[in-house]
Each structure stands twice: as C-alpha cells, then as structure tokens.
Length: 467
Image 1: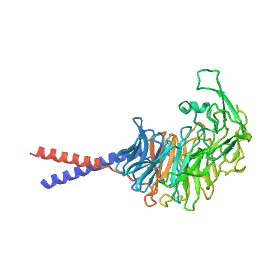
Image 2: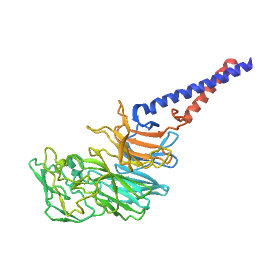
Image 3: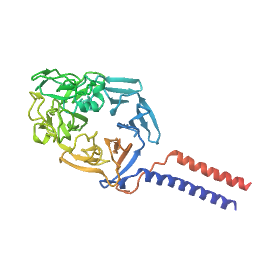
Image 4: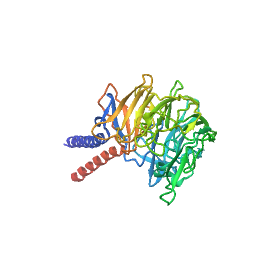
C-alpha cells in the first residue's frame, strides 16, 4: 500500500512538472516566436529576443552571447547588458544622445555617441575622440575596427545639402547652435550661390535671411571664396589608432555614412543616406546607397547624388528651382557610383555581413530599411559578387518590423535586428536540417524552482493528511 502511494506521488510530481514547463514553454513560444508572422526565407526562424526596450538606438553582442543595448531610461542614456539567463543590468550611463554604434574591442566597450568616441573598461572611462561636428541633422555614426587595426568613424553632415535653413530650425538645433554649419574636411571653393528665407531667429516676422553654402545661418557667400578644410569635418569617414587621438581622413563627400563593413579581401563597404527634398536647397528623388570605397575617395556630396550631378532634371523638386552646384573645382566629374540604391532617402540603417556557415549566405550584406509613407520596412540581403539585392524579411499582415536601425551577427552565426519602432530586438537563426521544425526554448531556472516548490507543497500536504 505504501509503495502504491509513493508511486502515485512520484507520477503526480512528474505530471505537475511537465504541465508547469509546458505552460511556460507554450506561452514563451506564442509570445516570442514570430516565424509565421513575417515573410522569411525558408530554413530560418524569427523570434523576439528582447522586448519593451526604451528608445533603443544601437547594440552589440559579446563572445558569450550577452547583448549590450543603448537605451534612454528616465531621461538618461545608458547601456543595458542583457544576459543569456534573461536578466539585465545597466553597465554604463551618462552618454550624449544618441548612441549610434558600439563594439567590443579586446576587454573594452567602444561607444560612438554624439560628439564623442568613448572607451569603457575595467579601468574606467576614457574619451578617445572629442569635438566631432555632430550638432546638426546627423551625428557621428558607425564605428568599426578595420583589418589594418584602425578604428574607423563615420561622421554625418550638419545639413541636408550644404546650406543651413528653416528645416534645421524645425529640427531644433539652429536655435541652440545658430553659428553651426557644415565643415568640409578639405578646402572647398564656393560658387557664390546664396539662399533666401525668413529669419526664425528674430521676432520680426518680415525679417529675411540670406545664407551661403558652408556658412552659418544668415551669412552670405561670394564666388570663388575658399573655405578652409577642418579636421574633423562633416560628411566624412575618419580613422585613428585607438589611444592616439589623431584623426586621418579616409573618404569624404559622403552625406550621412551610417556604418562600414570590411571583408576579408580588404574591401570596404559603406551604407549612406542620400539627400532629401527639404530645406533651402531641396533635392528630389534622393535614395539610400551601398558604396564600395577606397582611401581618398570623394562621393560627391553636396553637388552629386548617387554619383550623378544634382543639375540633372530628375533631381528638380516640383515646387522649387533646379539645384545648381554650390561648390567649384570638384575633385572629379565622375565620383564613385553606388553598387545599389534603395528608393527614398533616410531609410537605411547599420548593416552587417554574414561570415559564418552556421547562418549561410556568407559574404552577403544584410541591410535594415525602415518603414516610410511610401515604402515598407524590411531586411534586404545584398549579394556583393552577384550584385543582386533581394528581400530577406518582410512583414505580412502585421507590422512586426517598423523601424529596424541595425543588423548585426553574433560569433555563433545568429542575426540580430534592433527595431526602434517596435521596441524589440529580434533574432534570426538557421534551422538545423536534422530537426527543421524544433524551436529551442530556454526554460528559466525560476520555472524549474517553481516546479520543485509545488512538488514539495504537494508532499507536505499529503504527509499532513496522513498524520
């Protein structure tokens, strides 16, 4: 009789444990696995890795699979470390908004935040680079360690197309920094074209402003005026050895370089946001691009868009005049042309390249494109060798992807996607061929402890009733 009771008790405990684990497993699957909710290439799973993020802008993954995400919590810009066990902790704070890029370098965390590049290590905090010209429309963006050992820094432009205007006042920075403008990294000769507008910096509604290229707001330019180059300048890519503090110009004339990717054959690819139809010098039909660049390259900004002169009719806005060159004596009349263009500028985020057979498509770029009024959010795969771009992930009926800002691969061959719009970090993983439909589920220790607690309670109740 006693053996039967013990057997019954053992079976009961096992059943309770299985039901408990199955409950959380199913709920976790329903909540996090979204493979059927998106259009995704066969052989991959798509799940929500982290959710309910706060104004997330960038992330990186360490060799152990821990994820560092830049967030704004209670008005403070922090780096939140999400551990593999599901817990998280703030590891650094007090940054300028936005943090646009992070990377793991040896035992340190290198952070690109507005105006600065900062290193966080066990020895403390050190600003590697300061004084970056990031008080305009765009900040210093992606950072990357090249195979030459340099730290590369992408620096965006201050304005849309080289002229400070009303759009910059609407963006909020002109009032706070009325003398700020684009600083070119090399000497530039101006054509003397000036642009008129109202003056929002005065109370007189009839006051008019006249602004020249590469000048502060309401300051005119003259023909053949030479504006001396400045280091660091806008719309450029610089490189430096970590710790040296000395910047070397790598490429320029790049309106808003988002980030760079290096390949094993020493080629360099950069994601770039093109000019937009706004401001005192609007440019129509701008796009986002992927370029292959070399040291010393000039990509044409602000007088060329996607390798073509802005004087072409295709760049004329409907309600504005045909754009003209605002600089003279260009380095070349045939600047570097992009490998691929994506309709509508301002969509492209930080890309990455697949390097692991565990994921597949080795050598392909994975590029996030955010949702706009005319285009949907998606992740595009670009085959560099074949020069073919194709959709890797798209939404179905629900807008799972809204504003993907970064794609990045971990060392174990997983693709992570940070989506600022949905406040989530997603993970794409290749399904093992031997078990293509099984999803790996992590059961937190708390759930297993809960199972033991319930089992112990059941045992105590039975013993109490027995007595």
